[in-house]
Amino acid sequence: MQIVNGSLFVTGVPFMFARWDLTADPENPMQIYAASDNVLQFSPDPPFGGWVESALGAGALGIFGNFAVTSGNVGASIIQVGPQVQVSTEVNRYPAVNSPPDAAYQYKAIIEAPIIGPQGPAIYGFTQQDGAVRLAPGLNPNGQPTLTPVLLNPYSPGGPVCCAVGATVFQNQLFLAMRTQVWTFSFDQGANLNRTGTMAQINPVAIYSTPNFLYIEHQPTSNGNQSMQAGVYVFDRNQNNVNYFPIAPLSFAVSPDDSHFYSNEDDMSVKIYRIQ
Image (tube, rainbow, N blue to C red):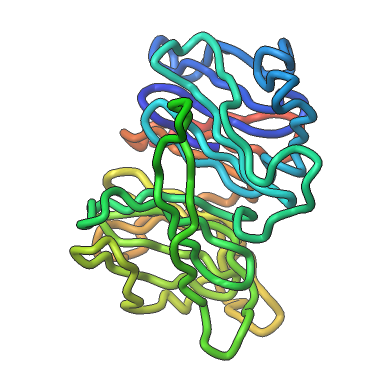
C-alpha cells in the first residue's frame, strides 16, 4: 500500500492493482479503478498477460511519478499510472513472459533515492536476503520505461541474511526493516547507500513514513525484544517513540498529514483509523 498525491495504491486479491482517491473524503475513498475490472486493458496480451499478484505484486510497491513498480516472487512489473489517472497499464515486465523467475527483480521493498547522483536518479530494490539492487531508470527505443540493475549492495559480506521485510525513506535517510531490527542508511552525493546505524529495540514486520513521522510495526521474536507489546510504534524525526497503536496490520499506509491510518488486517478489507 502506498499513498501518493492524494491516491491510495494497493496490490493484491481481488483487485490486482487498484487506486482510490482520498482527496474528497479520506474516510470514504472513491475507487478510481481496479485492474481486475479490465484485465486486458491493464496487462495487454500480447505482449504481457498473465499478471498474478503473487508473481508480480506481493513483494513491493513503489510510485515514481507517472509509473508504479511492483514486485513478487517471479519478478517486477512497470505500470503506467499517469498522467491520465483513470486507467493503469502495464508497460514493461522483468523477466519477460514465459521466462524463469529473476532474482534481480524480486523485492520486498523498492524506493527512490532522495539525491540525484552524477549518473542520474537511482532506484533501489531490496531483496529478501541478499542485498539492495541499485536500478537505473531509463527508456527503451519505444519510449517505455526500463529498470536496469547496475549494482548489488550485499547486506552482509558473509552471505545472505534474514530478512528484509520493508523499507522507507524518512528525513532523507533510508530505514530498512530487517525483521529483528531496523538498519539506517544515508545517501552520499552519488546516491550511494552508506550504513549509519541500527534501531535494535524493535522487531519490524512493516514500515512506513510520512514527512514528519516514522511508523514501524513490531512483532516480538523468540530471540528479540519481547518487552515491547506487538503493535505499531510511531517515531519522530529524532527517533523518539511518540505514539503506539495496538493493531497488527498485514500492511498499512498513512496519509501525509498523519491524520488517517489505512490498515489491511485480514487480507480482505482495509480499515481506516482517524489519528487523534
